[in-house]
Image (cartoon, rainbow, N blue to C red):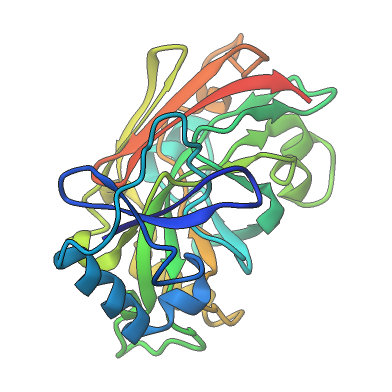
Length: 285
């Protein structure tokens, strides 16, 4: 299923995109697309049954904003330097273990919402990423377990970053990762049953119409399964938590000088095969 949330920011309602591309209203069946729903197999079954039976009313998508496909996000866990080609372009050694950092849940915005270039920023960068949405509580996932059994679905994430704040201002990466609007998510939460292999997904990103990133999750240093298992050894992952799993080569940081960092007026578009497409215009904060 392709689950999404539509409407004005803060007042989104749950919806479903059916196999014919028609937007369907879920408000009569569920309150929201959130961790509680993803952890409730019976509720998801009711949604699926209603969709299959053609019982869901159509919504007029004209002018309707698409919000983040997940409400009440608990935490956004991010994995840095997780693609072989991205490590090579930035001159970094591939990490021996996953690099883990966080984005605050309030950085998450809709897939087509405006992204704000922070005040004083000169190095705002783009990063297309596969987002993993947790559907079952994952605590110390064992080596003989399937970590993907804890995954409810997948989405497109844009891990916008300010590289000066991240790298040159001391401390951890968090200052360059948590600026407002820095995590567009969606358009859809695609349930895990529709993604045959999360390690076989093409990712692309364009800036002002020019292709900048053209990669595949096959290049990940640590697979989605290994990331879920690894992170669960250090923190509990709850239904509705999100993991951004890293970005392939092609970011501004890895380009030759002068590096083409983002400015107000730039337009970024990104997509992952089967998971949808985003478009953001950048404006000054």
